[in-house]
Image (cartoon, rainbow, N blue to C red; front, side):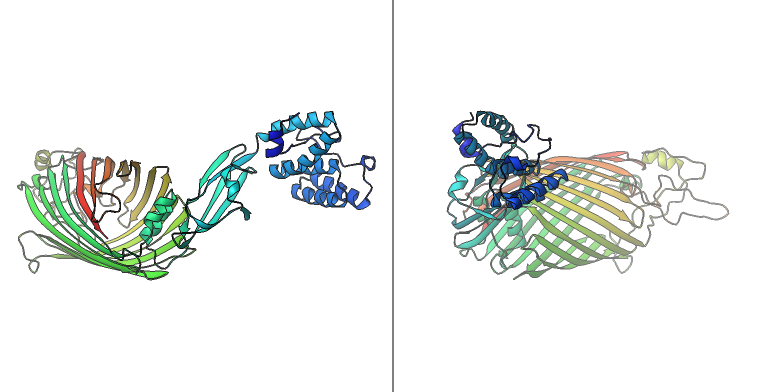
Length: 598
């Protein structure tokens, strides 16, 4: 005889009785008149249930058996209904009806039926699933529903038995005076005990920023959600950071970049402004200089930007501008974007436009004496999608149109006779020995259209966050490129976050790119229309790996709060078909200190 514990928790699953085969796949025989039917309508409904069962219409079988039981309650009908419920995956329903049958068999001291029931229950108990639901402490007026049915909070202190399959857990309550909600769909396998932590989140609000929404969607506990919320006591959040970056590679290029940035945000009023300034101090003795017998090049670039946004409700806008200047290149740009949110901020689309006006000159020569103009128009659109409380997907498309001469005015291109072949990665000395006396400047096409598609997936796992990115690129110069980026961040304690970073990039060459350009000298000089030695326009692949870390120096709610961050990466690039070099090894890193005032 099965134990009373099994009877209380699940009840028996009697899939076998005198009128039914023990095997789950065996046919359930319809009750015959001699089986005890005295109600003709109940008998007809039971026969209709058997017809539905024979056609594998399990729900129809359950419905007709239930109607028959309402007319005349017979154990054989309940056993038949349980068989259909089991095949439909409704294990709990089968248990409920078989409990009644088993109680009756025990009362009648029918040992044969009880023994068969024990065997069947042992088999089916392994298929019963359960949900372990952790409710937030301090929540008031909390209501929890599983598949639309309310569940008593006291009941949630123990595992809730459910059928295998998908179950929607919905909760509503009041936390810190704000109405909040939670919803998650759990796909539970047979016999699995699935754990769900209810982390209440605010309903759609006109005063939540995109950053706060993303923060809450990635939060794994109720405490983390509350940290993302705006506070009435913190009308403004001011951040300022000072950082330094460095770059160096095996092509004798060195760059040091100190920078400063600051921002002011009003979480409750929905506006923000930010600004930044950096200086790039560049020193280079790359093949572009060596091949022309030029000394090491040095330059300094100053760059500044300012941006802001306003989103008082469902819709908002962003705008910004940037300016950078160096000895032979000045760039000016501006951008605007509109954004909104839909489906309770589960979908947040954005569309923007940017314009860039660049002036390209030659170092030491005034722009009014020599310069090229490059104009670029860019349209971008995308959206973020909250797939689950722990998963965020961002997808976007960018289309750009460049018009103007972006050729480097210092880059001289070696020309070779038709019968001359120059090996890959040939040295500057060898190139100078084999080339023709003529050496024209670089010339690139005056038009370039760019198209890019990007996808980013962010997923929270326990104390870690995984971010995956994929970017596909194509342009009218026939360059095809793919970039795959992965980053994992792990919370080590309450103050330290650290994680690795990896990236792989591969691209094809521009249609006009060649390792060797041939020129005709007789009867007159004839040069290729387009020519370049820019290895970044040739076929290449690059692998990057590194590490990043963030260390909170003060308590979480301290003002000012201090955050120290650092990152370092090493990149190995292979140039498949270029002059002068075949590979490059580069290292770059950043270290900074950020202060937050609230």
